[in-house]
Image (cartoon, rainbow, N blue to C red):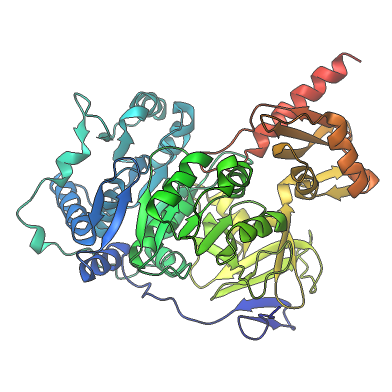
Length: 546
């Protein structure tokens, strides 16, 4: 194993701080995303930049650039300016990329929402952001209408998908203007202070907040996040609501790769079919989706020879998962990324040469990190505490929420991630759990992810979430388990596995409960707060009978 210390990451003993390399961003961050993307699309006009797995439609760089310019010019003709804010609630359709590229080129910030939301999920963000224009899938229009009423706003709504009477359709914005050759994307004098995206925090532990990302942070963090090649065929199911969806759109486009898009939600059989049909070379799957792939019967028979890079992140990624993918695709790399919306990309990234079991890699360029205890004291190498990070380009706060911004970003510019972890002597980062998820039982602190890792290894377990059921003066570890269709595992099987592998205080005193499916976000993250609600109800039901 190669140590990245003193080559990729450096330690300052006097401040107990780890620092990534000083390699500058690949692209100049002092420009608008629109300037960057349209310039890159112009360089390779005949290259295929996007293929729809739904329709098979292919789009060249020249076509993508032309559509982006036409949408921008038609939006300008409608009277919109940099002082406005838009919202997008769409799946990964064929006209999504040029629409958001047009907004980047005009310098209009966009709040990205998930097209599968219900009205009560849309309305809090709409009430906060107050967009002047909303791009919305036809399938979501009824829910969006209810949300608009709840938010007491009056935006223009432009529909994607099937046409709807009384509403503008996105195809009306790609009509020729006759002035396409005159278009110049906006230049921003201070791109680090101009909003490009308002992306929602994941909402897995509470209500989403609007994370404000500037043009500069998007270029510095997303555009050079991974080493994509112009020959790559990439796949990510994430919509633009998710940082991963936005990042892989920008990264794939500026690196000259061909992106495979799909409007349908993730299904293992669909993902495997797309990989085989389009010879995908780089694919992103969050851990829950990656586990589903490994457990699908077609995984062993699918032709995966085109894959050179698997990427996973967004939740805990086990060593067992990494090893399983490597066994199936020996010539491919399985890379683990640790990031968050507030940094606009990745904090740390693993590689094959320096990976250690259970780790998330070393700090990426221009990133600093330290570990602190509950009192804010900086801890030594090997000690566990909250991870704090600092970057050259920082997020611009939570939209309309100065209190939450102050809690996340301190006066010295350090982001408080809320993640518990440690660095080892080589500068490798280990993330143990979310600070909010830690179970407190009899003054012990228990990591749900540690218990989940052992349960996940039991044959017949498709998915699992562990949380602490609150009882007077304590929290009792409990597990909510999804079985595979043919599994015959019992509660006792789960209990016995935990008993064999973990200390007495980590036992599942709150119970083991089986369910058909865990509550999930559209991008494949387990919604822990909803899992806990289910476990509390089941625990109360069981104990009411005693």
